[in-house]
Image (cartoon, rainbow, N blue to C red; front, side, top):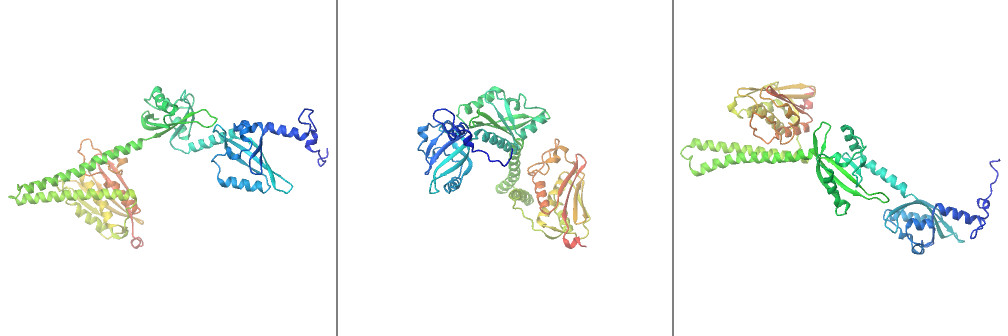
Length: 499
């Protein structure tokens, strides 16, 4: 057959059906198209003058309600005014338009259509009518929406589960949930929500879900326990809500979040309040007692005793000032307002002064502090006040935890463009379990056979922030019973680095 041969007009192939009411090929095509597509016709003003059976069935309106009504009867708020403006500009100019509509049925349910609108032009070449031929794509949109929803769920680090109300069977788990299930050696087969939570029987969960099923609440939230791969449990926050999408069976969404860190933060906050209260109360009690003795006149006869009380009050006033300054430093660190003014600084002189300053700290222990490598000036980029605070924190810790008559050594070494400073003691050391949290705020090493030391547990946390702001780093090595070494480094000043 010649491929270029002319073919007959399609309607001529069906000249008639031999049935009443038709008799022409065009009628056959209209009838056939109407069996497949959702068809409507609007007048020049956009009011419906025709709707086929599938249009009536899809929208839920009867024909009498549709004829003469604008398409706004079905309109949702999903599309912007610009969307409709562009559509009308296209078809009123005599061109066809294709696109997708989200509309509402009479019942309020949403449905989607893919539509082609063709203007019918009159003798003046202006549109007299608009033929709309569409296809119901609601099911496709639902599948795509579910797919996009689950892709979004996979981006959430917490665990997301979908489960059925009656059986509590889980039928979907996001990526975070699947990772945890694999770690536990579990699969989705036969998985129920109660199996995900420890010490929470099915009847308890069913009772919590009742307000959602009855429509009295939009969601419920409670705390439960989850099993860990090592056999222990962690606290979890569970939030459940009911989802009832169009054309889908209602089901539940469970959002399970591990709140171990939150619980730890709550404990840390409680410890902080207790520590600060203790640190404030102790010196205040001492100062108050000293003033009460002076006021009562009991020490008037012994000026030496009055001097001792005054010295005690001053010492505890300094302790309060240091605590307040530490708390202010922590606030500056948390808000990003701690700014060090780096300038050329003689590190040797700073360390020598720090050694002299620490000499009066706990004199009853007779701990000696020695420096090595600080005989000549070492010029670094630093903030003198802040680096003195770091040295004071490290030296006070070293002396505090040294044995009576012990020694603390400070070693300074140059390493390329850096200077390393080590503070070593031969004291009681730090338990291994405490090493990982030493730099956490309000944390102190726990010694079972020792009383808690003075301080709010802020020194190392503040020191790390200062050293990191100087472009350096700080670390602690310790063996319980054999002493501790704190090391940090700062950057040489360019003039010293070139020497």
